[in-house]
Image (cartoon, rainbow, N blue to C red; front, top):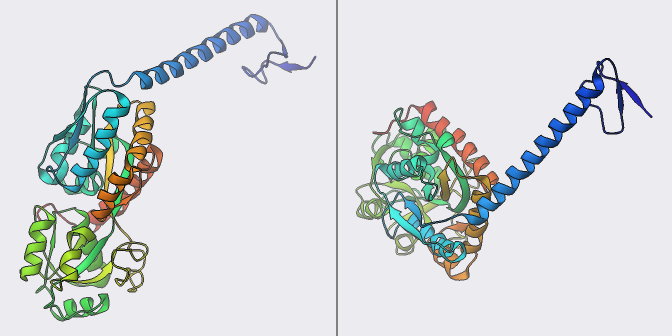
Length: 353
């Protein structure tokens, strides 16, 4: 029988070892009893977590949507909520909390303590709000559980037909020839549409005036009317105007050309590498949400978005279904925060820009 020295290897004896030394055998029995107790406690905790996941929810669940009814985040939220209601056996009720570019609703999700609240959010309230608002009442990384990246959409760089540019190079040349005289629209400071242009401005060395709007419809109206000259906007927000000649698409932020407009080159093809970006919608919850619950929600969100009718509606709105798991979404959100939050700080962008 193998012997080991207790002083040389304290606490590492296996059940087949004889530990020698003054008083070592009682210590060994105590250690083994303690180890068995810890194993039993861990098993009980795991079983409790599984039971908790199976039992949740025990009452109706709020699905907070930080945007108005009919918006794309609202469409995505209601699609998964309808499926959740069926599979979880409790109503999942949409609660639209609009304001502050999505920050108010996202704050409500982060601060919910009832154990029966989830919600959706988009880029800005999750990845750039903390950099833009020093007194933001929530910390996305600390206060949110990232459940599933639901959908994403590339954006077009579009211009009014009066702008003589036919491609990205022409746009940059025109902007350099008219520093500060061109304006661009977005759906608010820190939004995907805003920061895509800020990144382009910084990399190309051009100056444009930022005009924020409450939503894409208002910005699109002003672009078509010629009150602004350019903007980044998701495909569904501008394709009809592009096809009617009321706007011109110069490039798309996707990694590859998109089926809805295969004639529009990517930014990389237009010689602006590493500029791929997306507007996205994710399912989030309070940070205290148990991991088994988050995993089950992600699994059912994937099933909900796999429904052909739901997928068709979202793809018709220009979105690509992703339906990731919690771990993938957490890594993605951290990378997005580093990239875009870092851009905000590096360029000194403020909420009133």
